[in-house]
Length: 125
Image 1 (cartoon, helix red, strand yellow):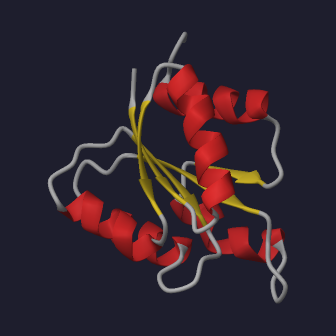
Image 2 (cartoon, helix red, strand yellow):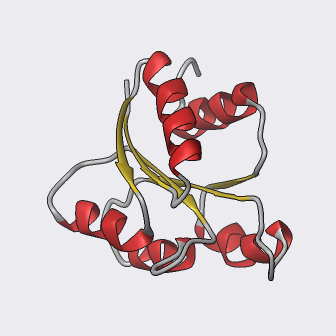
């Protein structure tokens, strides 16, 4: 199916989402922050979809979105966030709404995540 880059600083979220996506037939590469994700994107890896958390220490989802905006033939992007102690999910999505192809607030339902991915990748369309 699709090559997906999953960027999230929370290991439990990465593990859960990665398992779900692999069961759906996708190949998943994980990164624990925006810097690691951008290195993978620069390293010649091809991804059909990037799923990035918006709030992470070091490089966050905003940096990933701005980086991807400069790339030719950029993959589809799904921004996810549950907010944080200093910022709401709504505030975290302000940039994402204009730069990402879709957004999804944490916690999310697995069926909602898969439906958005299918729509972005036009699977079963």
